[in-house]
Image (cartoon, rainbow, N blue to C red):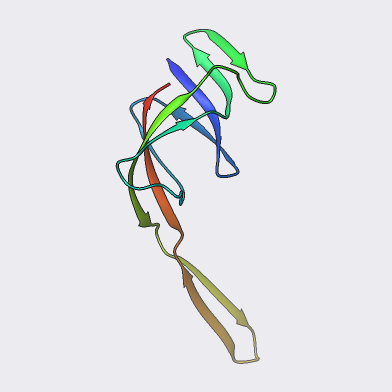
Length: 102
């Protein structure tokens, strides 16, 4: 089993090749291929390699599939006995990435 921990968009992701992941929107066109250099941890079979903070000579090839909005988050605020109610919704812009090769 091969997996890696990658820093992307200020967050850390646990990624495996052949799977897709949703991250905060990136400035890339659908169909583009990106190379991620900030690999923090890599596991090949039983060997674990830790970076300090990143592993040198280790890259991950990623393909941008599409951009879309995530599920709606409803924010509801209310104060009792004051007749104050506020309801808002929010949808985050998201990019779907496919991990081609580690």
